[in-house]
Amino acid sequence: SASIFANVEMAPRDPILGLTEAFKDDTRAEKVNLGVGVYQDDNGKIPLLECVKAAEKARVEAGLPRGYQPIEGAAAYNAAVQNLLFGDDAELVKSGRVITFETLGGTGALKVGGDYLRRLYPEAKLYISDPSWENHRAVFENAGFTVETYAYYDPATRGANFPAMKAALEALPAHSVVVLHACCHNPTGADISESQWGEVVEACRKNDLIPFLDIAYQGFADGPEQDTAAVRMFADSGMQFLVASSFSKNFSLYGERVGALSIVTENKEEAARVLSQVKRVIRTNYSNPPTHGGAVVTAVLNSPELRKQWEGELAAMRQRILDMRHSLVDKLKAAGVEQDFSFITEQRGMFSYTGLTPEHVERMRDEFGIYAVKSGRICLAALNSRNVDYVAKAIATVVSK
Ligand code: PLP
Image 1: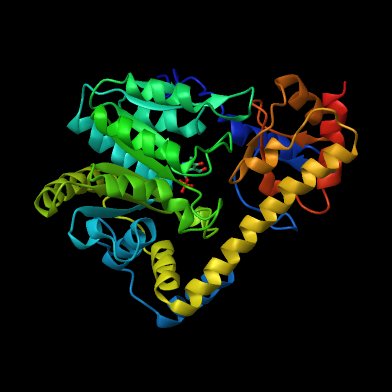
Image 2: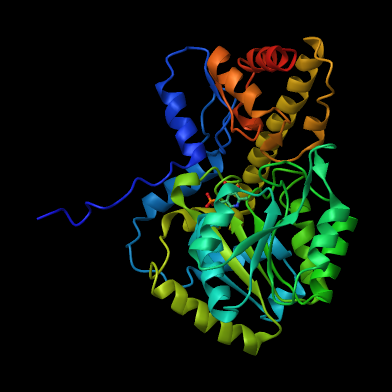
């Protein structure tokens, strides 16, 4: 009889992972992959942070048993996440209004939060920015939501189109879920200002929206504390909201899958009820989170010495990306490119929407072995002192015909 999988169709390839596969197959020595979303050092390697190495060594030496974690993860980890997001003495933490769950990366936080909101508001639609991280739509559709977009990016300025964004948010029906990039917007690198965040908070409050903040690059714009400005404005507003956070990038712990879902409720009693329901979502999905990555992050954040080291290592990653932004812009100018690329130094985080067209991207690949996403998004953290000249030359060539 026929295989039980005989009728299975091939799913479309993930566009970014597909790019990486094509890159691997390219035999040109000078090839560059600008499509990835990971930080690489000047040698093109994903770093293992010294603070992480130290915490891991201590953990291995302690020879701990590998028991189950609570469904919501380790209390010490969740407390450390709350301090990092809301501040050490945050009123909403002290009053017990926030609950936090250790999740499998930021993606896991988005999925657990999405599954829960879908049960709570089955009629609600969910809105992501136009454009947004590729996986936002997929994760939330997979949670059962109808996913639509709100206006965000302005190709003319390579920045956010705030009036359009605000108008879109103000037009949403009550209890719509709005996914907001708290800093370092992916894919555009275009963030809104603090005063504009104030207006976003107001629009969410006025329309009874359900804000779901995604902060995957905390520390990549101005610093771990500074980058929580939007999160803290929502906290100060007294509203209820959700936050998905991740240590993949700022601890360079991608494969350990370390993230968190935090939910801000109205009061302690409500927090207990919500906690009990979200625990059911997790219990019936993956039961409880893994131990290692979260334990390492907790150890670093709770040791004054290691924490200082982390802040230094994070600052170095941030600075290197900034240096690459400036270097690329300078080299494009030096190559005689007429078009003004200085917006690259204004954009924040790991990425830039360069405005390169699909044809430019294709030529970069075919003629130079340089791989970028079709949208023109490039990862600045894939540039280094050895390849930035080559990339600038390639861009200069394709944009000037
Ligand atoms: N959200 C955004 C906007 C991202 O760019 C990413 C990673 O690329 C994530 C969430 C999820 O990160 P992870 O699940 O690897 O922690």
